Length: 196
Length: 196
DNA sequence: TGTTATACGGAGGAAGCCTCCGTTTAGCAA
DNA sequence: TTGCTAAACGGAGGCTTCCTCCGTATAACA
Image (cartoon, rainbow over all chains, first blue to last red):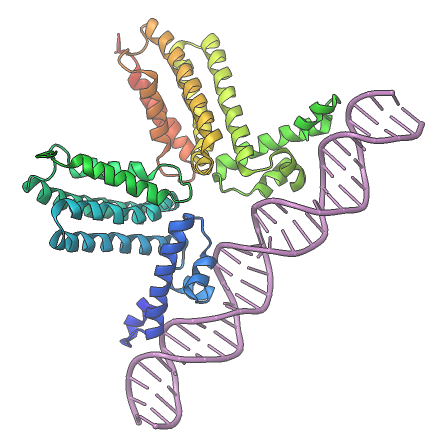
């Protein structure tokens, strides 16, 4: 598989990289929709590869979860940077929180799934908490500096609100509902200045 | 099945009652050991009945979980009463907490398993919280009245300690470890009077 | 002791888990 | 380009679990 080929100096095969990518994308979709119980065969099917290919890239259920989750975190970090550059501070925060809903959907499954194997996953969990706090903290700091939002909350408060809202039981369409709740929440963060 | 036979006035069959009992006992054992993922077929095997019998008594996975859990709670309530009558207050509390470990082992699985179906299970959850708090509260009150333990903790604190300790990751033999931790905790509750 | 509602057991089809193995293909060197 | 080979691929197949259906057995009642 990909990692091993590094030993021999030969470049990893293009199809291997491509399939790994396809699997991660498929897994994200499947796990977000169906939780961590979702079948690995469904992931392979959605990715359009054989089941053996999935197992070759990710020997255990946990392995593919971790890979998906870590990538989600990294993408959120990138997104935070992009939004901070391109959007007004408050809007950046709002958009970032909305984008995070999908991540929490995946993660919710992860928490249960990762529980058995403590070692590697607690490390990943610590890493992710750290990264997310940093993102929210930066977005908030900018908005506070511009006087756009109140300054008496910290990043952990906001993250807690996000996660708490996502725990509204998963009816069909829950992600939209949470999105709306988040908009209201962000609106509540705003400094009231000169409103009619 | 058992419930339905009430409609016709005919008494429920003895074998039906017996099998239901066997299934509950077996399920308790299987779920405690293996979490809620444990196979229902394993439960039926352990109970020595056919798989269809299990499904007849408990049409869904959730149904058997709820039945097991509710029974656990009720047994703990009874145990609290018995211990309060038969043992010195502090010892009663200690023994009750130790007995609770098994319940938490079952429940840990339940929380995850019940999550999908919110309605019935939140009711059960509220019921159980209430019952357990009452038990601990009574045991503690007696011990406090006798001056055996400190009086600056309430029943929720102690329950939280119990549950928190049980979340030490499930290595083989975790129940024993938690038992020892609990003993230490209970020892910490004691009033220090005249020790050498 | 006979009748019948009731419950029982297990076969069996569907789906998932994971492994093994014959086939294909991408990288590299000639 | 061509050929070699490590590397990756797909899917069959053995196993387990889920859940249902149905023929058989038996407990309750008359």
